[in-house]
Length: 96
Image (cartoon, rainbow, N blue to C red; front, side, top):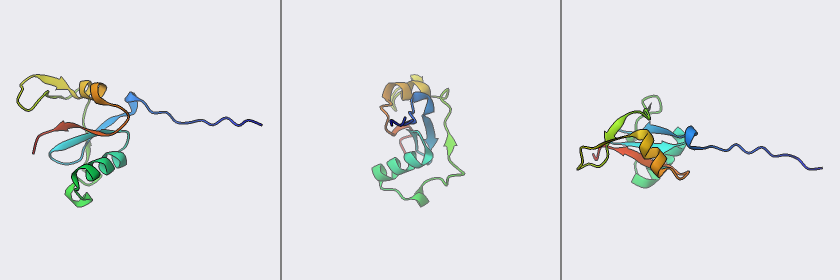
């Protein structure tokens, strides 16, 4: 007898951008995934990041500078659509 397995598939519409600290916001499917990625990348500890109840979800409509040395603005949605490959990444940085 064959059993049907239902696998939860997530797509771009499930991505959120989490502001983990003053400097950086990470695109990920979950806060836990964003934090794990960021801590591994930066070597920071939980104590150096915002606590879970302080983390804000960045609006996809928020406009940020395209590059640090450029005044051109781009939406967070455009960043996520351009760079999302199924893995967390730093979507917004203030270059602290």
